Image 1 (cartoon, helix red, strand yellow):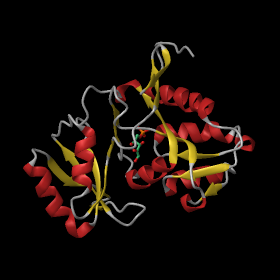
Image 2 (image 1 turned 135 degrees about the horizontal axis):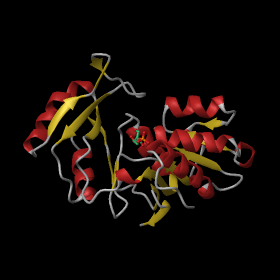
Image 3 (image 1 turned 60 degrees about the vertical axis):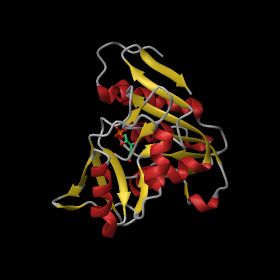
Length: 229
Ligand code: 5RP
């Protein structure tokens, strides 16, 4: 698919959202992520909804959008596996490792991704990075552990701040809080994810290395570039 050089970021998201339809398996349930890029995918999915059995969603926001288009939404407990999970990313590197959670849906995203055989990441080219960490790393935490976890990030050179919404701590779909950690450079995403995930009070760290992308549909001025990992 070729795109004119003048496409905006929003148009690039539309392009990859539509391209992701090629990865949806007819007759099956598809895993659906969260965010502005995924919203384009959901809109495209609405045009072929009779071809799928339904969706497992990673957030209340995506569930609402899917249902508004008449797409059946199944609970994650109702499926044993999914062929494909389609989601965006805040950063993706050349190995398919990602930072996610800019939309605060990281925990459910990781749960649905873990059900899927293949993670297909859809992103505009601004998301492709050499090393993860320039985007503030989202970490979902149990509120009573937030300060303790922030100190641990401080000890590794990061600065963690509590994400706010309307002046109050943002509350996730799971009733927890989000820390955003600046100043990290994540050279070994697999080790980093394993380490942070076992800190008491961490619900989910936004590094997706164990559930990395297998394919990335990258929206570029030249069209959709397909990266495989
Ligand atoms: C939500 C996410 C999103 O996938 C990520 O923030 C990218 O979003 P967008 O497509 O809006 O740039 O992880 O928790």
